[in-house]
Image 1 (cartoon, each protein chain N blue to C red):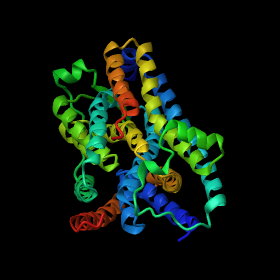
Image 2 (image 1 turned 90 degrees about the vertical axis):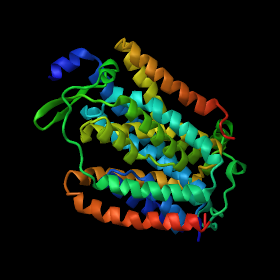
Image 3 (image 1 turned 180 degrees about the vertical axis):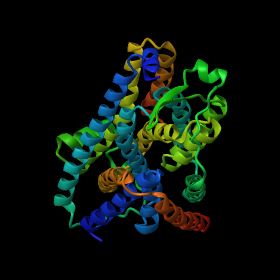
Length: 133
Length: 277
């Protein structure tokens, strides 16, 4: 049975292995960045009293755009580094779509190249569509 | 409370959330929102941001193992992700116009539904003949079991796709993976064996959550001080859970957890109804 299936989709097994590795690496990489930023955050402001999390500030708190976050990272700001780790975490499943697309292109599976492109476009709309309202 | 004490307490709470979430299959996000709002009195919008991150971490961590084993149906996941991502983006947009108290009540209702879904009978039978749409979309596949490869077919693709859109909306609105709705669509409607449906649902949660997470990040729902203990705690908990799962019988735990969740759900609905959010 396995043989028939793998003949049907020759690259499936390799893509599965690769996606598995990519997801694992993405999660590990992002948690490493978050941990580094978190330790710095605790050293710098661990003794301070807790911000008023019962009040929602939203965008005014900063670190909501790529530029602000990158500034935070290059300036070695603890919160900026954590937020960069958060971005890497969110990017992990998005990159997975991209790698699946490459896989389907290698298999010349037109239908799924199309389906994956649709998912990717929705994702891009969400990122660059200015939906923050 | 200092930032240090808050971080340590939240780290411990997130660890338990990840552990229980992976043992019961409900995911970490379901526990993170009540933990942050009811215990730490954090605004529900920050809680939603943190729960989305917990869902992505949980899903990507677990999916990496399932995908390698070849249980996950990648084509099915990709096809249904059209529905869940459209839903998730719509949910994130609707969220702006939804009062936080309404969100709390909706969250409580979904919790009750998830608890019921966890306890229901699971579909273990593989369908032998699928519908025309399933064949056309190449959704039929096979998965490894102890008795060798088992091939399965599926039906009701349209209905499954519609339920997935609703699952996506709830995911975007509430910041959870809405695994229960995803499993309802795949397991009960499309007749997929539950091992395939749970792993494929888990595989999709990361992409679904990311679709609304990018919107919430730009809206300032993700606070670094909360994200840091939540992400690390949930990941460590989910990792422990996946190691424990093969050794212990999680059935008793499921019953205990579902009872606990019912109480949490009632409290969320009650507080939302009394405008405490």
